[in-house]
Length: 110
Length: 115
Image (tube, rainbow over all chains, first blue to last red; front, top):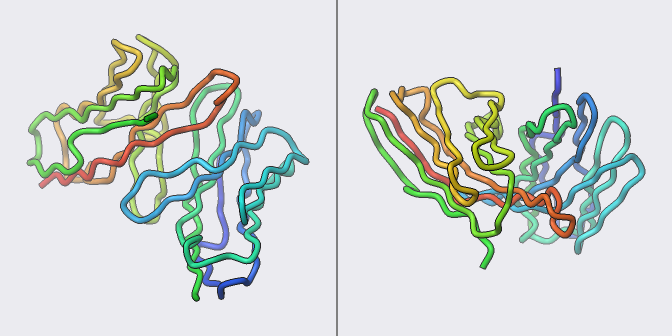
């Protein structure tokens, strides 16, 4: 069964304290792994798409990496405005369904 | 401005009273989708559409209907809403052109309460 698992569920960091969020997946034929940011009461905001193992993408303090079984979202020197829920999702090749993980709630203390 | 719009944003209704939530996108995207978001369960796909007149079930389609008569619109229909359909609903669209392939845009959400 296709599945996406994110860990940890919640993460509290001090401003400037770098860390990583994990997204592990099992899917029959990956057609893309996505990362989103979601602020309370709002729709998710697209961050990255990764397609193949070894691929990396960066945006400001965020860097996403992909292996055959998992993806990491690295946050370098985070600021309070990086506080949000970060969602991971996969799209598999046999159908066009998209499956989301349950997210990681990130809180950055000043 | 590229956007996905949903209406209404908030809706309180009663069991069994048919309702429609509209969704429209102005990006000429082929792929559109509906999700529901519940605490502890994350975002779950209800239905998706790869193009006009083409729709498919997601993971939680029971109790919902969709139609795709025009490329820009993808309404979600609840024929006989029940309290377990109380949730936050999101519409989304994805571009399949090379320049924006797989970039998914979400609407602002519709908070539905079924009494």
